Length: 194
Image (cartoon, rainbow, N blue to C red; front, side):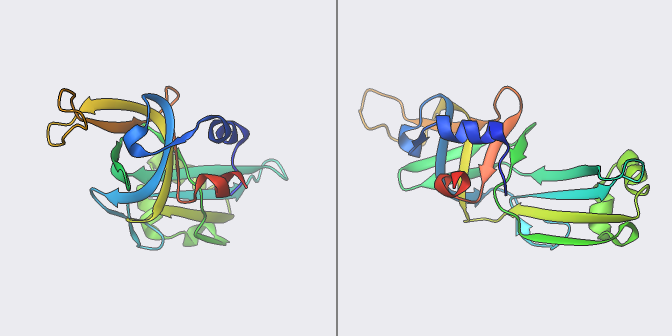
């Protein structure tokens, strides 16, 4: 997947940290994705933490112009590395996914029924204007390697022990940035930039 220029700029400028040492503010971590609750991807039926179905259609009004529709669902999850665990808050986020798993094209009327059920009435009406479409499906599976870049906050973790006896133990949580962006990729940072 080709990253947008602004996402590449984040990846290049935000240093990668271990979870135990991740600072507050904009930061990035790598580890394994741990599910809290699973959802099934609507096209392949795979149990996953989240999915993104991208539907692209050729615009019948303007030759050469492509329109697209995104269907995204992602549950909050944890990212775990050898130094600790960070909660990932996916509410109100626009994830940027790293890897494409499936792709197909067909007539618009044959789009998988579970995807159609996810669409709003306006989106269904929009899709029915087109004769042919292409779709791509992205998903994040449990225990898969994951890279997350977002806004980190620390909160006191009453269940953990601090390194120094006079300090509180903190648990980092990663939230979408101010513009709603949360970069989530199932590829390591160096592969995303490669």
